[in-house]
Image 1: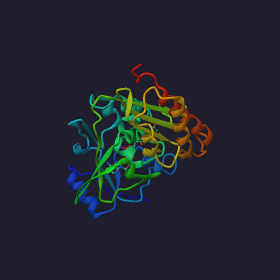
Image 2: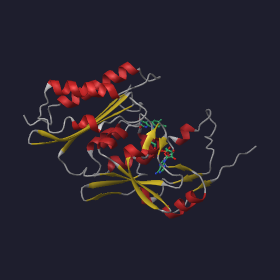
Image 3: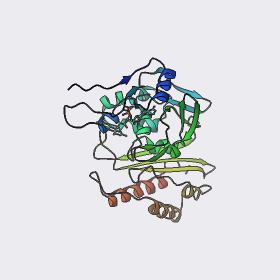
Image 4: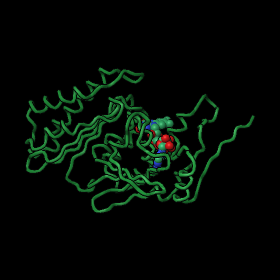
Length: 289
Ligand SMILES: Cc1cc2nc3c(=O)[nH]c(=O)nc-3n(C[C@H](O)[C@H](O)[C@H](O)COP(=O)(O)OP(=O)(O)OC[C@H]3O[C@@H](n4cnc5c(N)ncnc54)[C@H](O)[C@@H]3O)c2cc1C
């Protein structure tokens, strides 16, 4: 028997929000995660157990603009669009280039990577060290949430049924005095799911660390970041003493708890994550001497 699904595709964001307020719908942006999640077997269309609402065509969700030094990225901007945009910081472009292959990058969106909340979402560690804020909208208004509060576990986000993620805001990212590093370890340079992800952000003034942020992906249920450990480094002189590096590596050794799965082992993941941290903390290129 022929199966029917209900699908909505409104011209405007406000109409879409009204529908989401009336009915519990599955949101589809690029569909590259949700279609895979609901696939059953080869040749059979994915079966999503709710009415669906398409949002990727909405121009309100595709704006990328600068406001003071903050960067606002529309949630439905595709990876390919972001690669073409001069405002997108190079480390984020480098992370995007490691995602899937061009066909998926033409469909997949930054908002989808966040709302899918995979422990191995490639853009997530960078968004954590950029202190990304998320603008969510419903018929009752807007709210801003820090990405670390929004993502609560694998595929678990703090989104109400009637809300859409509108924008990702990267505060002060367009000030050009921080060094940002992104590393992805996978089986290949692209089209591989990460075994380990690393992002580091460091700002130095007068040879001292002003601000430092460190995030790991694929080594826990969500991105691993510890502001308590980061604070131990603030005010330290660059280059860091070996003893300081050893202390920080030991502190992260206690909070990183990877698992064994089909892609890698917990031991490999932890070793590589801590090596990447050591490498970031010893990097010469941002040191003044
Ligand atoms: C072959 C293949 C390779 C891949 N490779 C990688 C890779 O290398 N790295 C990587 O990180 N990912 C990879 N992915 C996963 C996927 O492409 C990305 O996570 C992508 O960013 C998802 O975006 P999307 O727009 O397609 O999300 P969708 O599938 O449309 O949505 C994902 C989830 O987010 C929700 N959602 C989407 N947008 C919004 C919004 N604006 N507001 C509220 N909820 C929303 C949806 O309801 C759904 O629950 C791959 C996928 C495939 C199929």
